Image (cartoon, rainbow, N blue to C red):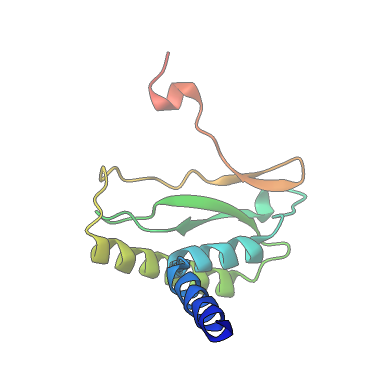
Length: 132
C-alpha cells in the first residue's frame, strides 16, 4: 500500500512539473529597450542644448518606431547609438519572423527640450498637427 502511495505521489509530482507553463523568453528587442532606458536614466539637464533624441525600434515598413529623449550631461552618446541600433535591428528581425505589418507612417524626429530639468521629447502643437 505504501509503495502505491509513493508511486502515486511521484507520478502526481511529475505531472505537475510537466504541466507548468513555460514563461516565454523575453524578446531581445524588449531586453535591449530596457537596457537603453536604463542607460538614458533620468535624462537630467540644465538647458535645451543638452537634450537630444535617439531613434528607437523599427517599423515593418522602415524607419524608427519612435524617438526617446536623452541628455548629453550623463549619457555616453556612442554607447547609446550602438545600443539603439542593436535594439532596432532586433525588433526588425522579430517583426520579419512574425510577419508583422504596420501603417507605414514615417515619423519625423520631434527634437527634445529641457523641461523641469529633464530632457523630454517635444510635443507638436495642435497647429502643426493640422488642428485648428
